[in-house]
Image (tube, rainbow, N blue to C red; front, side, top):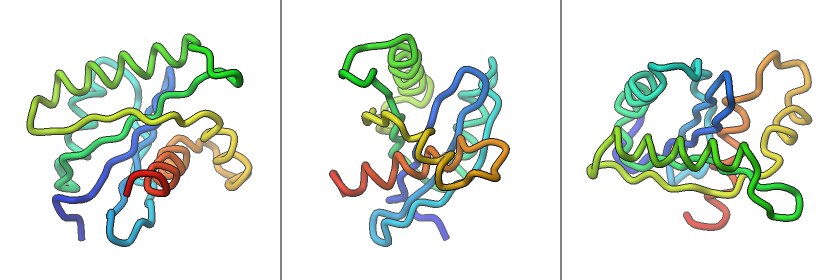
Length: 132
């Protein structure tokens, strides 16, 4: 059962957005959903966030292998800023460097058609190791 301390992880892609949740007590990320990244993404993502009674969202932001800002870095940062504006001040949207989370997810789940939700869980796994 979700509680208000759950953390939602988000892996942003051009076509899909992976979503996972994690209790900061158990620290076991759980893939939740893969959403279409379209004009309704914030509405659909908020529905998932509210279903799991969370007020904390971590958006993965990748950087290039040398730490440089890439087009995907900018896309994810803009997504996080837009999500915070959409959700309002009662929610906390943070970013976390998630370089290679999708690569790791593909290695862990080679038979999965899409790994966006697993990548979101990996973002939470690493985030928890550093901040929770």
